[in-house]
Image 1 (tube, helix red, strand yellow):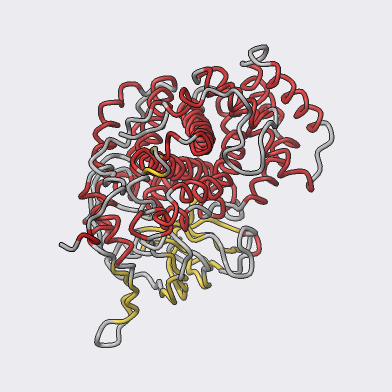
Image 2 (cartoon, helix red, strand yellow):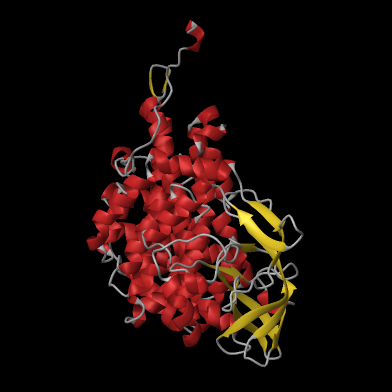
Length: 538
């Protein structure tokens, strides 16, 4: 080998690690009532951090989904082919209970599932879309007991069987959603897809959906207009008699990120749908589903943030410049500590929301807190992901800009969760609705924040300022209010549960506003060593 080809001063491969070896995550799992799941969580973490799973993820992105509209004889087939790595990832996620199996009924199940989903999503994010949708469809489908009896066991299964076959012959099913249309987007009440009742109790759907991800799922929840208004329907790809339901995939979206996962535009022309819930009550029928998927948005963004921070710290521990490793440089340490704070706050809030979901069925206070907390968590955690991943990428310098580092994929993925299931404005407006119509949710938020009253005068002052803002709420201030309420909530959680080094730095920088516009601008005197000790390196 020529001497110029000798490689030095490069970080070793970050592989075969336990992605669940994450102090804030493990503490939250125990605190929120799922300590019984820690052994299984570590098994998931070791698998997610393995070389084999990383290779699956790389292959799933390198060999993107491909649409086949017709067979060689000209018959429509409307199938999407995926790389085997995608199926392998999806199969493991389903078998580990991250899809519909979480509704089995065990206390702490949603916290255990949330932690596992957060860890497994760090292996590859794209396949999490059908996992999340299948998880969220189960409670919505309970509005139609006959349909739930037919499809529920398959959706709650831990078995993954790809391919379009008669659902009655499959032990495991996946579910997708078809809500948005080209003229409306988030305004689903303007949908033009129509549903005409048939004599046998089914409906015939006609229309064109604009964004339907994972089109190879077995069943879909779809919104369509009846004479009574927007109504929810279950649309199977294969009908109970074994015939193919008309589901013409017009094209796959050419997306910024999430490219291992196909997103499509299906056209319905005489497509059979089974009504879920009452006519004209489609939005109300799917509201529980939206709450579940929005929590998964927050979990997915927290996962991307933890992954980015781990990669940045790993690189700087092994890269030297100007006489020492990068992680020893005071300025780099300030950046890494700042990134660590942001990601720990995201994990802590996301797991608190999972705990509220667990307890909401029997605890009215937790149900009310979940209502406002998920809105705040989805808004703020997802908003912060892009900024954090961009800064973490920069810690790797030019290496972070190269595809092989994995950072470009993380960066392309980072805006997704803030857009899907309602963009930032939609969630900010949802917060205004909660504030105006659901006093129990506001009181639950108040109780959560005031659980830390007196522990830090800066947090107390920030909470007082938020209360002043709540007296004069207007739409143009909705984003400001959502941001401040989320930060104060995170501050309360960290003051109560995180080490003093983390809580003090977070409150000083985020809550009290002693922070610049960029990462790496923490207040003087923060305990950088104590903060960096919380980084998950496996």
